[in-house]
Image 1 (cartoon, rainbow, N blue to C red):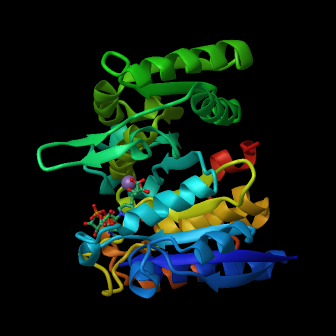
Image 2 (image 1 turned 60 degrees about the horizontal axis):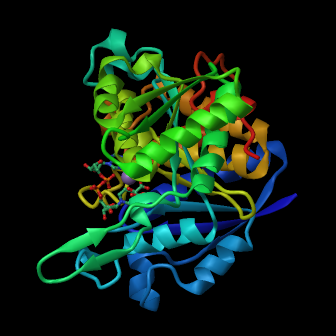
Length: 367
Ligand code: NAD
Ligand code: IPM
Ligand code: MN
């Protein structure tokens, strides 16, 4: 079966890591009988340069008409003062596709424990899943700016919280059955609504799941002090953005982290959580693991191609064990060499002792 994949390479290291993801998808597809039709579309700064806007209608239409979307990264200093920024394009695509649930698995590979700045006993065995609400909150509220002041409004509706809470509880069912909801209910009205709704959904629909709550400031601390205690973290848009970058440090590098953005009616979008990394762009230094892990999530959550997804996760794991990594993980390979090492390992049997992202994979199917 041929799957239509819309590629949005974007800016900075985006195109480099997109190439890595395409190579991994192609290899896994070859081995597991999936063929792909890849087509690239402009997004972000590249789209501003080409079409005058960061998410042209043609790009959005192509995303909607695809089976899954892969995005590299958007943004960069060139467009920092543009009237509409590259980042606005990504936000528009998330909103137009209704991608309200963003899954950011955070697992520490046993051979990368020493890459974290934390003590090994704190990070060995870390395995949690951040579910970040992606189409609401302060990102999407009314904004204004005049000479003397600026405003960003934060709004959440009951329905927006209900649907993402259900994703988190369902994910927890297939994991260790614990959800930690993170908010700022001691200060924010939206957080008080968030907490009320999460408590109700948990009590009425998922009584078998243990639910607790943390205020976001304390959560930032607990993520460092006791990261192993988390199973599923459920949080709103901006807190999830910040906490998932913090969490990435546990894994050794932000360059390892993949993500899936899912909704109900449109195709999913899959992207590494890192940005366009302008400081290393164009130098073939970007770690391709986050992009390749996102490709595995595309297969699993976007296409239901579980075997192919597993083969990619396994290859990532073995490459790490072999030390075939970029400098951010202590290796000495270029980005393209690290990607080739992973691609060459896809389908090669070896005994896995760890599978990045595969935990949620087999057990969690989004609605
Ligand atoms: P960033 O994630 O681009 O970079 C932060 C640091 O991590 C940099 O030192 C970078 O070199 C390093 N890094 C990132 N990805 C890496 C990789 N694959 N391998 C090795 N090192 C890597 O964040 P930033 O510098 O704050 O943002 C740069 C631009 O990217 C901004 O315009 C921002 O808005 C944008 N951004 C886009 C996305 C996205 O497209 N999803 C995500 C985050 C930031
Ligand atoms: C991310 C990024 C985006 C976000 C930006 C580029 C809009 O930081 O995907 O984590 O804040 O959601
Ligand atoms: Mn971010």
